[in-house]
Image (cartoon, rainbow, N blue to C red; front, side, top):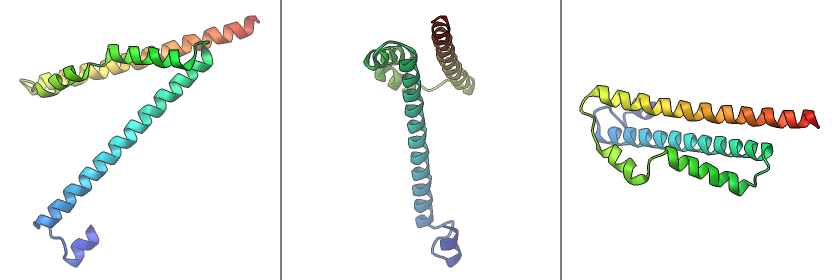
Length: 130
């Protein structure tokens, strides 16, 4: 893009420059979102694999439990749409909403980590007692 500007094909006030700049921003944003989703799915798969290794439950049962827990914690799509459509009355309400969501995520992550730790301890104790 800088090279094209130097050549004079795109000038900062030019409509084409603005279009190309917006395309670049959207592609980068979409790429980052895709990478983030892949990381989340990979982390979830690793977590389920660890739980499968530590328990006697079949993978289908573990995945069903994961879906149930996720549905309990995440709002349904219709509720999510209502949340998105509501506009906060002030900036403080928006900040409080973001902080509460972050706290919920931290609680969920901490709970999962504690559960995995407990399962590891149980597995180690069962191996030691044998």
